Amino acid sequence: MEGGEVFLRVGKHVGFGKGFGVNHIWEGHKHELPAWGCKSIDEVPAFVAAILTQGAQVLCEGYQTRDGYRLTIVRGARGCAILSPQLDKEGVNFYSVVTAYKSHRNRGAMNVGTLKAKKAP
Image (cartoon, rainbow, N blue to C red; front, side):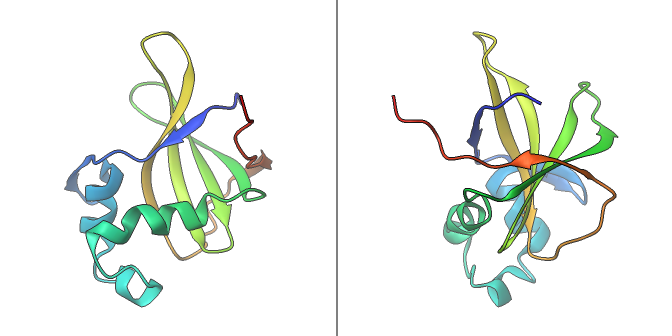
């Protein structure tokens, strides 16, 4: 699994299990997010950032998306985030946040590493 920056996009919510980004996280979890300290859609980025901290477990599950990518789970002390590995126009790896949630669901994923801080230029 290759490293890369993580981006949280505005995204869209299509329905349960369909969508990505801030809008998908808020629409899919707004009934439970306030209990986790995330009281508005504007606080979703801080909620996700609190999960994606240095040392969080990076897990890979066998699920493969329609575009051929395997989803990556980052499990931190404050919850889990599901990331989709992507390539930008120049062929550089990055990860797009699909969703995030508080509970640590056992999804049968394999631990493949830990999240590292971005290296200084």
